Image 1 (tube, helix red, strand yellow):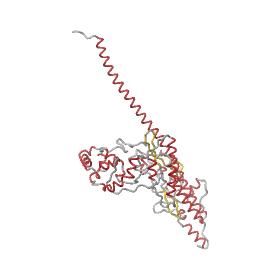
Image 2 (cartoon, one colour):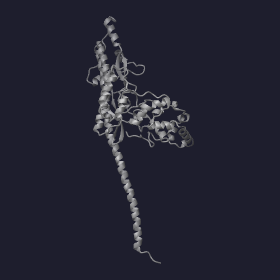
Image 3 (cartoon, helix red, strand yellow):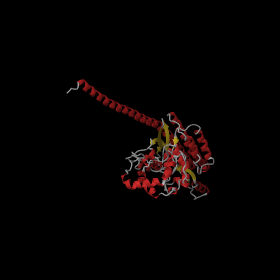
Length: 457
């Protein structure tokens, strides 16, 4: 029997080693490319964050300045009346000035956001300018001075001359439970994600008949972007002097106002003059009427309340919100994009009045001396990044569908509604859930399958 030469056996082993080496090299090359791709994604995210966070802070600083101005005008209003009740006409004029501030400052905040975003090399958002112009037609100014709407649109047009780099986002249908305004519903239909219905809309899936079952579509929000969430309340100076409780909230007292005046370096509000020793004479009667004449004051709106959203299970927060920060109030939320990577950022002003957080009393007194970044998911439900197709569907397609079941060609969300209205889809989903619904696992907190958000912020 011929013995195999040793050099031949070594050559065979050498060939095997080459194959193994090539396999290892291929894995290493793939790993290198994966690391480069991951590094690029992480770097893009960080660059987008660097561009977006300063934008939200810049807009929030304007909010703080506007709130402080309106608060100081409330103080001036009270001081003028307390000093001389004959200043009724001049004091009333201050309220129109407050209204102009609440109208103009959000536009200035939007302009500041564009400047900061552009300086941070954010890219223009497609169709954002057109959507902002369309949104301006829904913004309303109830009980404002005559010509307020025209002033707002004229100021906004100055911003809309250039491209929009930071889009101000807010819920289109605030406080709505309708699935027609829930983007997760559409995505579940398009992706055949039956388990979403198991946890969120199983009874609706079982009972659905036609588009009327969605119910009435809520009205589109007419709230001004970067809104202060303030309103007008009529109250006399004598009510401000009282320490009693109103029907809903405790009114701000003169003591609180004096605390704020001292913080600003101003003297206290003068005390009321003593009554005449001879009873109520003519001067006392006039003074009493003027003290009890109702005056317009700027007060906190309905959005200023304890920060319940921060306590919900969707947010990874384990500690209690500190009392000084436990108020939602006005906020800014923006979308920017850099290197085709979207980013959402939120910020809001914080402050105190006499050591107490805002909203201790309903009268706006200012004192906002800080702005902070806040979680977008902690602001309001329904906040999503600016996506033209989604906004177009909400503004222009949803109402027509709810009325007559009409869908629009070329709209992916209308395609989801058309698929939903197909009996086959609902029967298939219902049958699958009947057999396998018990295998569905509730997702981790957040909107994505693995928890967290489906967008960066």
